[in-house]
Image 1: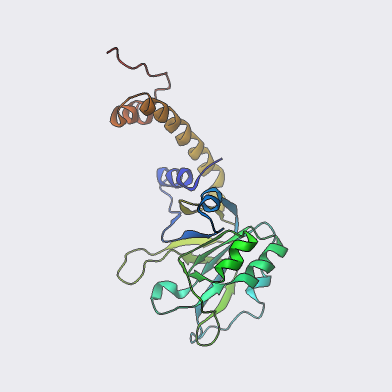
Image 2: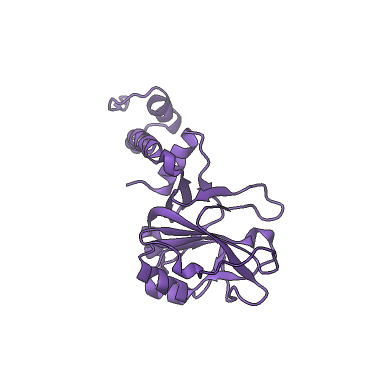
Length: 232
């Protein structure tokens, strides 16, 4: 019912952080498929760091960790600017589909795009690479809990958005947003309220009313009566 833009507006109205910048849909493959992709579900999280970092790698492979019905949300050190490694490829998608995972949101890179497209699996990420996570690349050190995604690259000011296991993820062609699990009903109620108002605005504008006047009447004054165009 709600697009990521609707949820972002509701989060903003409630002064909640939730938009995750820099991420885009890369799978499915065609423009029409991307336009119609909507990923909604509770987050299951994982965190990758540089392979040279002191943290120990998780004993369980992250590809086996996400529960059915979840959206995998993965933090990587991509924003540090010195990693070319993808953490998600065609085999990860094949396993995720067997487990019943709905899709993946990666603050980093994926690979095997052709395989992703063939499997029609929703993938949102920063970019794609042909290089896997091995060698001197990255390792998974956390499964579950909270991660921070959407950090600004070097020179960009954005601390990222915290996503905790169980938070709701809404992702579509316009972007990715996170709804805190303990505020979900409040956010949905606000989204419905704002969407209903803008449906009045849309009708007005298509009938010839100016944007400023329509906004003032509908969004500020709260008028719900039909607008009658002035006589010519």
